[in-house]
Each structure stands twice: as structure tokens, then as C-alpha cells.
Length: 414
Image 1 (spheres, rainbow, N blue to C red):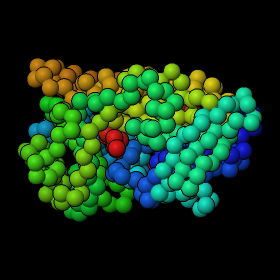
Image 2 (image 1 turned 135 degrees about the vertical axis):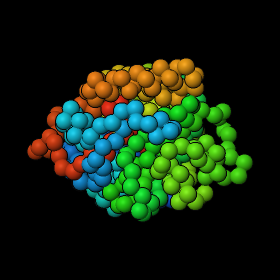
Image 3 (image 1 turned 180 degrees about the vertical axis):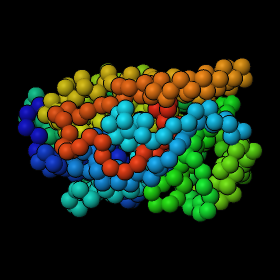
Image 4 (image 1 turned 90 degrees about the vertical axis):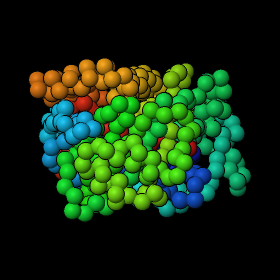
């Protein structure tokens, strides 16, 4: 594609900001255009697995984020009555994959990323669209991006504008886009003083719940349920959670008692079922949900966006190489996430009994049996290697049913 001196990033979320920082470190002049009035993300928490943390190592941020790890005890998977199906210590995943899993508020990660960019590099309240994707073979035809203040030109455009990406639709107008995944999610981050609990995820009939601590002392809880698309509570979403989960085990009742209606976020989940033919066209590259939105059942949406960003910064002058590196991997992970969703959102009573008994039996044989399900995901290494001096890192590990290599902090925002 020739020399890239100027890049525009459309979208100031995790994938867009990571790409901006990585390109900035490569000497590229970067401008981030975020349509919202601030970079403060709509959402709750995100779980970063060792693969994403290694990506953050490349931009000098990995250990800062590892230091925010909160959970250092046991965790696991439960039934609505409170029975443990499997339990695991934090060390098992860290030992297998060379590092911890870290749960933190999305705003914390965004703040850390934005702090590594020049202040003038980020423009908020700046809706943007691609006017011309440009021609990488023609130095006289850069990409052109439309903004409220006029057009901008760039050697590279990074489209990180989310699951309902307008850039993706413009580049690939015949692609069907995202579809409803069959379930909706709720997320809560609140203080919960005086309540002790083991980090857990609970599987019920077409419903799940998870409760986990954050480093700052707050609690992150999430839920998901199989419901028709577009449904909303007739009163408020806290009341809906009480109807669905009010009789489940502690500390779920304590979380619901402490939460206010305004503390509860709800979003239907969508994902891309048909892979794109490429993650680039012209001088434009897609990252994160814009390229490969997936269900949150592996907790990999944000993690894969970070991988995309780091890989793109490695191949920023060769976009076909970026597609070749990312499309097969993300397609396989997205398909695995769909399969996991079918398992833990199961509604058939007989199937649920078989599932739970199998989980309990396999857990007795050793957590490594389940951790193998995360092989090929958490053990990813960035192209060109990392900049970190030690592999294990510092801090503990937050385990969300970690035996199963899956987490649910991801979100599907409009």
C-alpha cells in the first residue's frame, strides 16, 4: 500500500483506541473521530484474557492492566439453587496460558488507552463516514472521510464503528450484517459492602447470571435470558431481573436489593453469522465488532478487537496481510462462541440435566479438561512478539467459571 503517514480511526471504543495507540507508536499521525460527546463508554465491565493482555504489552500497557486484577480466590459454575458444578482456583488458567484474566470497568481501559495519545488526536462529537475508500495502488487517491467540518484525507482508515457499522455496510453492501442471537443481556456495576461471595457464573434454563468483584471494591453482575428481540420490561429492568432471578442463590438477591433501576443496562445481543469476504477494502480496514461481532459467550469480543488493532499496526502498510492474519482466526472463534451460547442458554430440561451432570463429572476429572476449550484463544501471541520481560505478570486472576474458558462481560450496544 505504500508509506502510511496519516491514519483516521472512526470510533473511539476499545478497538479503535488500541489501533490508534499502536499506530501512533509506529510513527503514524492519527486522528480518532468519535461520534459521541465523550469517550466514556456505554457499558459496564470487560474481561481481558492473556491473549489481549499480550496485545496490550506491545503498546506498553499490559502490566498496568494486569495490576488491576481483583479476584485471587476460587470461582466456578453453579446451578440456580447454589450447587457448585465446578470450582477452580485462579492459578489454573494463569499457569496454562501464561497470565491472568483481568476484569475491569470498560471506562478504566478507555482512559488508559486515551492517555497514550496526544490530546489533539481525539475528536468527540465527530460523526464520520467513508466517502471514498481510496486506492492503495494509487498514491494520488487517498481515502476520504466525511465529517461535520468537511472532508479529511488519510493513507489509512480504521473502521471501529461497532456492530452496526456504517462503514462495513458501505464497503460490503451485499453482506447481510448482524442477526439477533436469541437472547438479551443485563449488566450492573454497584458497590456491595459487607457481602462476601465466591466469583461465580450460574446456568439455569435459558438464563444465566454472573457476579464478580472489581479492583475498586464494586461488584460487576451480568445476566442473560432467551427472549424475543426488542422486548423490554413493562416497569423497569431491575423489576424484570427480580422476576427472572429473584429466587436464585446468594449473592444474587443481595445484588438486586442494592441495585437501582438506573443501575441496570439492557441490550439485545447480535452477531455476524456470515463472515465478511475481507476485513479491508481500498485503504480502509475493519476492526472489532465492525468486522466480526460475536456472542459474548467466550468473553472475546473486546479481546479480539485488541488483537485486531495490534495485528493491523503490524501490517498497516499491507492490508491483505491483515485480513489473512485475522479473518480465519476470528471466524473460528465466533463460531465457537455461537456453539457455547447454545449450550449455556439451553431451554430443554432433559438436555440441561445431561449438561449439568457432564460438567460436574468432568470437573472432578480435573479443570484442565475444560481449560482445553480455551486453547488456541488465550495462548495467542502478537505478530513480532511482545515487549514484556516476563510472561506470568503480576496480580491475581478473576475467574468466571474459568474451568470453561468463558466469560460474559461483553456487551452489544447500539
